View 1 (tube, helix red, strand yellow):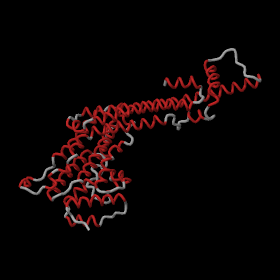
View 2 (view 1 turned 180 degrees about the horizontal axis):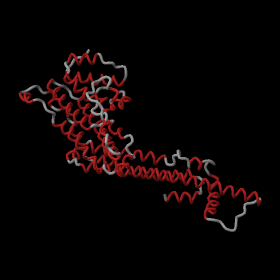
View 3 (view 1 turned 90 degrees about the vertical axis):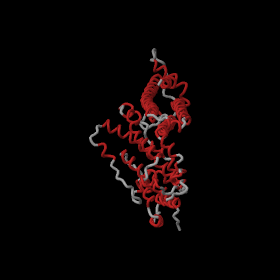
View 4 (view 1 turned 30 degrees about the vertical axis):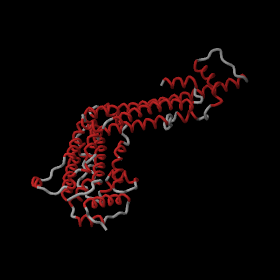
Length: 409
């Protein structure tokens, strides 16, 4: 704001674009340095150590950083609004001075200074004399004072990058535990194991998936303290736009694992709703029922927590499916293990009550684990592949059949 005062004093409304560009550069550089600092913090984190020592405070601290970015963005918007107001004032000042100058010249045939001048009038005389030759277009101030005008485009872009860096930091913290336990699941010996005497006691979910499920359930408690503050929540919500983008990489890796090169479908695949016509999702989306009887503050708290549970849940689902697609071989006993693990995750995600979870593909892969080889083969051969998304579904099914040793024509 001090820079804005100096801009008024030194330019008087002349050549304001150059001055605004200078201020824009200062602000964007500052936001850029903050983004670099946050990315450096993310890169320096040891994911395995973070997972081993994971605590609710890690989530709270990461969310506090997100809140700082929300305050930064809010301050920038407020500063831009005040600057528009000053542009309107400078426009009127220029118009008034030019009319006064014109009137004086017409009356006296020459421009005569009055006996006394105000500070504003002196400033107008000096700035016009110094800057008029290189001035902007006549309607520049009028356009800059409009509500739709963007005065600091570089700063807005820099804050957007800062926002994405903070979202990634929070995501990295919240997803550290699942990422650790899913990292090596493709090479677990259980997938190629055979039946043994222990099968009499039934097949239970394995440790890697129960660790993931327990973390997802515990994440609700980790998010609640921050979300319970109305002020903090309002600020953080300002920078939650586009947060789903931080979960997209596992889904790109899933496509890569199945040999699909068309990345234009990755968002549709991640969303999953378009797959419901082609697979049995095994659940009904009832998320809105949880909001009944809640006041506005509770609804906002619930929505914020669900946004992060949605993002982490999507990333976990995408990574799990990608890891499954990289299992070299599945025996019948391995399929049984996989079916139990996936059923467990389906129950956990359904218990969270987040819209869109569990993802339709989780239940579909679980179903394919128990299908007879002939039935699975017929399913794949009769698959409608009229769209790229359904084609990707077919590629996932073919890869799974190959893992099971089902021969395809």
